[in-house]
Image (tube, rainbow, N blue to C red; front, side):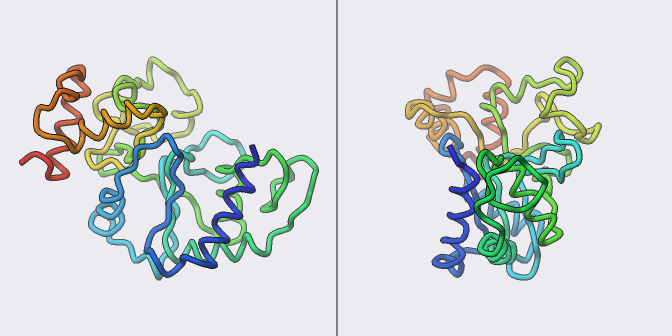
Length: 232
């Protein structure tokens, strides 16, 4: 599907034509429900980052590829204006046309993984590492699975599969998996499910979509709505 080539070409285009239109730039999968106001909250209010003078690349960080830098999972990953400008220049200048196997370089090649190659280019060319987008309780701001599923993920029961591998021992799990100002929730492909999410997080208090949720999902949705000021 050539996702890596699509992305580096897209970032060059953004760098050439839209660099002055935003402070933060994100790659968001088509099936990720995105909360732009929570990106602003996290970067500006919670972290106090300077997008023009600081390098940042952040999302749900994975550590499962040995010998490679940590990477931000593709569901939703963002970088600062400074990093956007710099990485676009890296992509303009990187080698292109290589047809062989992975040789651990920042380059265009067939079948390259977008997330792995992005993290490698950032580390090798800019010395920028992926930063985990978590709160003080180690709860993730980007969920890689529907939130009613994430609320059941138990590290002890699941074992060290790729999501948990090499994460800190105190990483959030189960009811404490997820930040109450989420930036993205992944794997919602059907229009009906996206509309339901819109109602769950932005609709009227105690609407029909909220009433359909199980106990843990309803508790989480209510926390999000209060944190975002939807419910007082």
